[in-house]
Amino acid sequence: MNETLKRLSIVSFVSLMFAVSMCAQEKTIVLVRHVEKDTAPTADKKDPELADAGRERAKKLVSATKRYKFDEIYSTDFKRTRQTAEPTATKRKKVIQTYDASKQQELVDKIMASKNDKFLVIGHSNTIPQLANLIGKRMVFRDLLDTEYSVVWVIKLKNGIAEKIEILSY
Image (tube, rainbow, N blue to C red; front, side, top):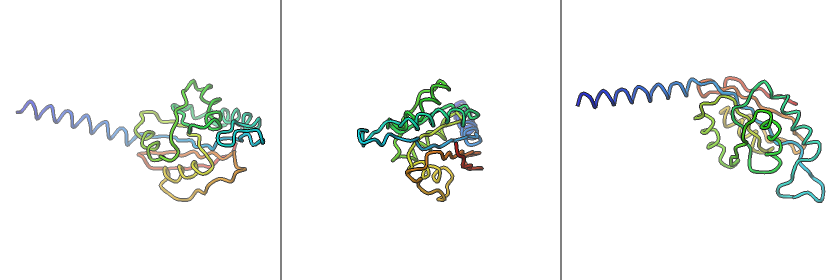
């Protein structure tokens, strides 16, 4: 009986220490809308690739975010979002993980549970601002206009709480 109580106490202590370390972790989440997509009459209307201007801007994203040294990169499962993430993923030698933009809380939970601390998330004009609102626990960001491609949210979390949200342009 005494041995069982000891083991249970040790397991409880280890679990508590793990939970405390996860909560105390600082994280940086960078949110970006995909860059310019192909709008030519011949382009795929449901899942277009990037336009030439978008390919150039995706390359600029690499240098604009190089200081973050991303551990994980997420993209929705569309050509334009994956192609936006590709230059950064190639530079950082990371695999692009896909997420469902309609299940944003699942993505946030996955990021919060990760032992890593730097994340890049590529989404859409109507999902990235909402994700920023969800992570920041404030409803302050509006959907982006169709012409807005250079907005970057940098959210710094400490103990699971947004300490700082910066909005940058690249």
